[in-house]
View: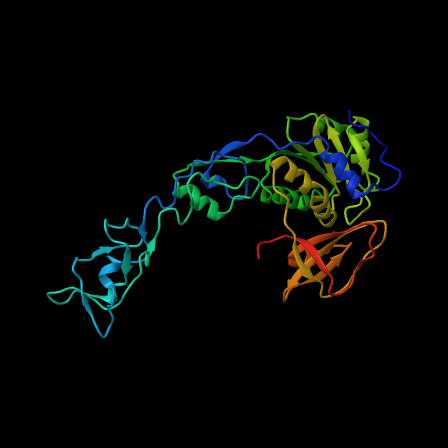
Length: 375
């Protein structure tokens, strides 16, 4: 049973918060989606039924299919009459029987009564051998990896129309402020979609505990997140509402930005309540939501990119501080440390978290950062 805590007290270290959120969380059941919808989802395991690609030798270039043995000694200075007529092939066509190379059109002279070659070729030249693209019995997708355009190409080449994916079903509750702004909600929903999750429902509620509690009793989902009402404002009652119905585990993280984030469990469903500010919501998403999505989707560990720092990073001991980084001349350049701006978010190529026991990193230190965009 999940233990419930008060929303007040010492700040919760990020590791402890993640341990509580991820405890017992398992990848969701795979489902099949059409290829047209599969881009960006995390691939689930599929039977290794891919046939050899290509299935037989094919022409790699447009030209004349010949026998390499017939071309020995041929050159521009000493054209060689071909004893067997070459066969014209287009790129991708199956190689004719008893032909083991392809000469470009300009290297075979068909203008006279005798066909002549003006260049040699070795067996396999201009040819794509059977199995050269992909060996037989390979899985069509790499389980745990996000499906990319090359994966879809392979799937279409081998005749698949659907792929197995793991896509967590997410429900969102927007604890609306008086301004009725939805910037943070849209930011997180779009981040969820980019991570391969499926946002099933977005419910907007008033900023009072009763409305929030009523919204929690919605349809089943794999992950539930709330936006707004986690700070110290007079109407900020999200953590209180979570505590009253036994959902709250921790409120306030040793995290900057995003320190007012709350975490909980609704039955077996992990719950994260993010701040209403886009800057703090984005930080909370990176630090706490994304790891939950990765676990639910069965994603392989996200690889970091290691580059040296162009400037030092100074960080406060006792807090996990998130850093936004730009990539410049094969170095990471800090754009924001512990306090995001919209401009820094827009320009950032990657991010990292400085552990609470660290004062930061000196200039030139190689650090591992997680990409925010494709390079």
